[in-house]
Length: 390
Image (tube, rainbow, N blue to C red; front, top):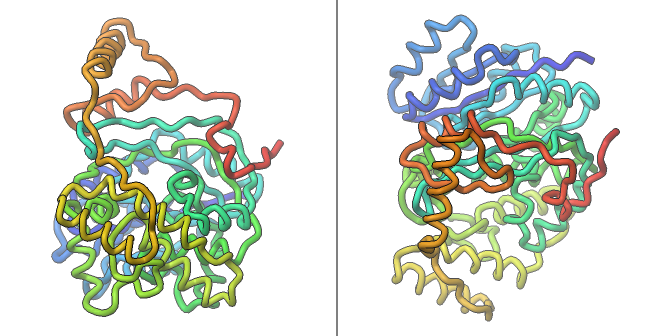
């Protein structure tokens, strides 16, 4: 079967990022849709209209994030003959040639959803660092039941790169049609990624994982998710504004608080109830420990103390984690020596990542010149117990 891919870039008030994301997809053999949920149409509209290879979408009014993703996907499905769809963050810059590799992998099992990974440039904890994930370039089958059990036991951090989120998936059209018919939407909920994740794990026995970073996440200062984790910054305040008033995360293990993966657990539990318990119930003690581990993101001492008080009231008895620390002088010296060697001799240690850069452009240039080498063994996937496909 020939796989035809349509990529949807939802964006809101991020013209320059959306344009960079779309440019990185031009020439990659995919159909590109940019859905502009901004307060006013601006540069991204002009860019798309000047590019005959890019479709411009704009909802009739400003939508909450999950509603917007759902609307944009439905519009792309109606306008495209593609067999597979993917959501591409406007903060992502795709690597050259990687979408063709992904399409080739998907063509081997075209009825299965296929996940992939991202490299990441993060400004927090400081300084700004480029993280390049390990990869084998191989295709694996992963049990949905296995992943659902890990999520329910609070091990989201350990499995994050493998979760079937809309933003790291290539999804067959049939899956999207089936979700829309069964649930009334593809991904409407508190978070579109987490709603889709829970629905997929509840509805499908397995999925595939293409063990390769397709793109690089940039502009973490604008990240809604990082703003949620830090309780400050990013576009999280705007995200909450577009949702409006009403009970916040009522199905979460600790309703109403922004901490760790509490939002994901809310959507997980909502879907678990919708699907008649097809997902395992969360291990409350393990999930409280997982939430508490993310206290390290909370910088404000008063906010942190209040969250500890709430967690204690819910039965958490663990040790409070240390906040993010600073780099040691030894690491700073080592890092500078390695980067100087890269500049002079054109080599860096293949497995060492996390180098600091002054801005995203410098980090992207380094990633292009010094990609992390492919490795033979998939030790980084061990927790998922994947089955390699020949």
